[in-house]
Length: 347
Image (cartoon, rainbow, N blue to C red; front, side, top):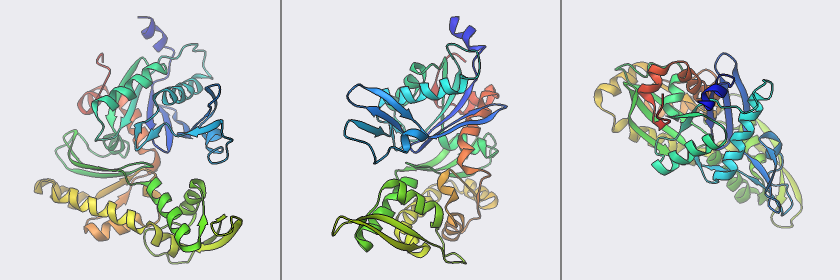
């Protein structure tokens, strides 16, 4: 009863609890938080020093007693306490401008398709411990499809590929559920690791995650570009241990990322092969939709279209599709009941 009373003064939230970043969306307000899923902890005192953007700046730069922790690995919680504190920080931050002393929002959170019951319970418990009064879990690919305004409840197949930070989800959705799907532990972070490995092998230079991600964003591509792009790369020379700078171009970075891109494409083909023929006909007619941060990689849609022989398009603002879908469900209880994967029983 008390929770329901407090809920009247709380803002309902759609949350994309991602490996790389966490997004929070409020119906009628839009995205209110878009910050890295990183928490800086003082290991001596167990004190949280920074969350989100401030904590990400500390990655790879902390003394031994401070750790910048990513509490989610491959889309699932690896550190329950840190995830709970991170969620509490974001929920409190959303309500900081209002007069709510104890926020008790309804929350819709995206989860991977291959998540176990134990992992589902961990997400639900973390959200409730962080202050949510009701938690609804929805599969990320379903939420992304809803956010991209695709007809998920119809008897028409929708194929969506959500390329996130830790996972890539390939799903064929029809009548409010995933008919065939695949979850890969290959996504944006894998592309960063490919670049780190390539630079190490080709130039004998060691670079960090943030440098690799920056290179991927600035000059990374899945297909050859019309105009050649290049940028300086700085790291530590593995031979003499001193700082070193080299110039890398888009062709080299494309070569570095090719293995992961090819594996994602191979799994898209496998998913299509196991999809019922009636649904494949729909997919061929309507095409494939790309969402997630990985969809922003230059030419990834063209590369997939060429390999699958099916039209591919990138959703509008692919990075926020999932969280927008979660937020839409808050104002559509009928659709939420149809597509919900688990969570709070009292509707």
